[in-house]
Amino acid sequence: MRNLKDPASRHPEKAHRADNPQPKKPEWIRVRAPGGKGYADTRRIMREHALNTVCEEAGCPNVGECWNQGHATMMIMGEICTRGCTFCNIATGRPDALDPFEPARVADAVAKLGLRHVVITSVDRDDLEDGGAEHFARTIRAIRHRTPETTIEILTPDFLKCAPEVLEIVVAARPDVFNHNLETVPGLYPTVRPGARYFHSLRLLQRVKELDPAIFTKSGLMVGLGEKRQEVLQVMDDMRAADVDFLTIGQYLQPTPKHHGVDRFVTPEEFAAYESAAYGKGFLMVSATPLTRSSYHAGDDFARLRAARERALAGGGR
Image 1 (tube, one colour):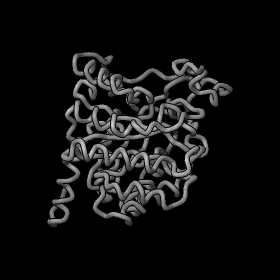
Image 2 (cartoon, rainbow, N blue to C red):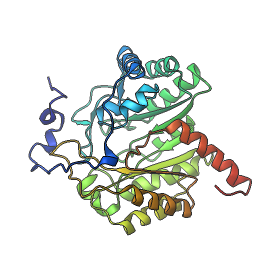
Image 3 (cartoon, helix red, strand yellow):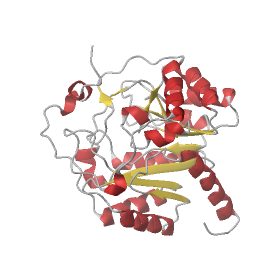
């Protein structure tokens, strides 16, 4: 039995890698240790419903703040991923079979947390013919049935090894926001995201808009991996060409010495400059701060995103 709390068992594909030094975090990247009643209540509901969260599995620095507010990003289809990206802290290996009762448990947890907006993500499931597309659709439908007023944001894998038609299964379930992260600039894909393909991920986002223009699309980048500013600006242009609505940019934080090293800590002033540039390129919504993550403040950001679209349709600015 694997012990997923042990880094060597959690990331067997990284065990042979040389250690990368972990630089001291600057003041602007530090957060308080999680705790408080809201945090405890959210944790209890997740445990009672036997649900995984990307907040815990990926070691998100914002878990204390979000869980205190009752906001947890649920991770469906198990806790073991079939990919071994060098930035990611989710366990790698052969996943278990899908749990057919999981969508109902997710919907029940959403109701008990009283969520007005929920983010659902997953591990990569290259072992499944549809990559888990139908499981995503069932989860969306279960939430719609249980709490019809809840808006739903999904953060999906790339479905790289599936037939192109599987994306239609997810889109047909009509999430309010379809998020798929490009994660980094194309030149770093071989070392940071070796199992993925940059232009496939970009095309995935573009196809969502082609299938249903009403769905908001969203994508995210990490910085501090060794990318250059001009490369980040080019990715912004690529996203806008694919009609992506919402961009998130956050600082990469190294989970263990075996993971990809931090090249540098990007300053808050640089993040502000990225935000300004992104708005200038036409994104409806941008979140660019050191602690920004895909689902951080997702509910508030969705309200702002919807308002920005309404202003744009009315001919106003942002």
